[in-house]
Length: 137
Image 1: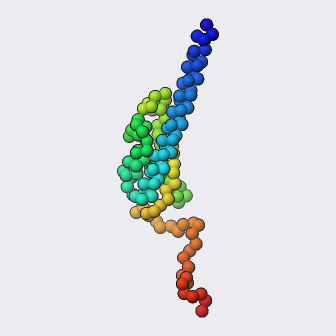
Image 2 (image 1 turned 180 degrees about the horizontal axis):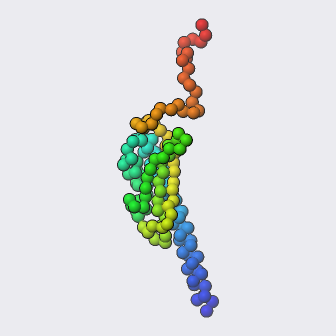
Image 3 (image 1 turned 90 degrees about the vertical axis):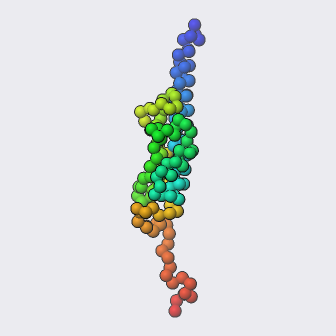
C-alpha cells in the first residue's frame, strides 16, 4: 500500500530530474553552438550562412532543426557576439517549450566586417611614429 502511494511522487521526481537534464543539455548545445559560431564569425564575419552551418555542426538532432535553433551575430558596446538560441524541449527532445535557452560567445575579429568601421583596440597603444629613428635629435 505504501509503495502504491509513493509511485506518483517518485514519477514526479523522475520527471523533474529528466527535465533538469534536458535543460542542462540544451544549455550545453547553445554554448557549444555559440562558440563555433563565434569562431567562424571571426574568419568570415559577413557570411551568416557559414556561421549558422558551423554552429549547427556542434548541436545534435533534434536540437539543430531550423525551427529549434537560431543563430545571430549581435553588437553591444562595440564588441561583437555570436548568439545561439535553442528552443527548450519539454519532456521529449524535439518538442518546443515556451522558452529558449541562449548561449553567447565573444567574436575575436580576425577580419574586419565589410559593414564595420575600423576602430582602434581600446587596450592597444597608438603606434609610435618615431620608432626606429634613433631617439631624440
